[in-house]
Length: 335
Ligand code: KG4
Ligand code: ZN
Image (cartoon, rainbow, N blue to C red; front, side, top):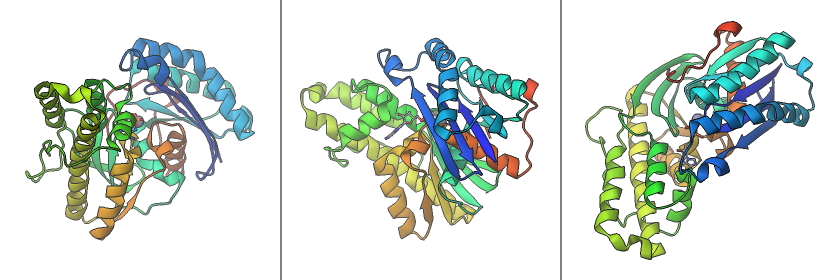
């Protein structure tokens, strides 16, 4: 079975071809990062226009690289939300047009379910498991009992983890997206140099809050105006900030897994590309008797392979999606 995945929820125009849910034949990602970088963040109008200009080429390239024709495709999976409406609508309309013209069924996919099921591109993790989805817009702890059966047991009350990386990077005068830049800067730094707050660790629920860490970094920069005179000072701030975020994510995730009686953990979403978070998750999970999984970094950040994977798994589980002509952008879609 050949699935064409289409993902345009934010600033990546991505298309992938997946065979039988396990053999990835192509995974094309056209990133707009260089275009948005000069504005210090994503400009929705520009993102939408870029998707319109590139979707056609990216679909063609994905088919060519996979060595298949449109007529060979059995199912199209497309992100229907959450995300930017002006971005989502481009992928959705492309999927509708292709599906209608070529009589191929189209399945609307929740972007977060795509992140959650990305791991199946590499390993068939047995249900049930606990997923920690950490991205630019979400920080969700989700209990997954089967494909399509999810329960959110914790989420952020303010900034998402990735958003806090992006905002702190901006304060430090780094570019966008901030996560990889903070990680790189922090590599030479001391993660214990500054004790930034670990918010909401003791109150026994599984929600997160990252705005306190971000504000503490801002106050620190205001009080220590020499921070930008020395690379070592900047590296210490980046490493200490990252350490605080990672600490909270890991501790909450492991507590939640224990409370839910789950043995397997799946770390996913753009922030899961972070080496420090991955290493700590793998080692601490193992120490406490859990098994942790994380997709390779290329499948953590936005991509269409995960959307194809989710479409394949939902189709195999005989779960219906929105009928083709009613598919529309759902900017606030959640689990
Ligand atoms: O999943 P994703 O690609 O897009 C959304 O669905 O939001 O996640 C993007 C987020 C951005 O906030 C970015 O800064 C963060 O993931 N990110 C990272 C790393 N790579 C991407 N954060 C920390 N360390 C990284 N290496
Ligand atoms: Zn994402």
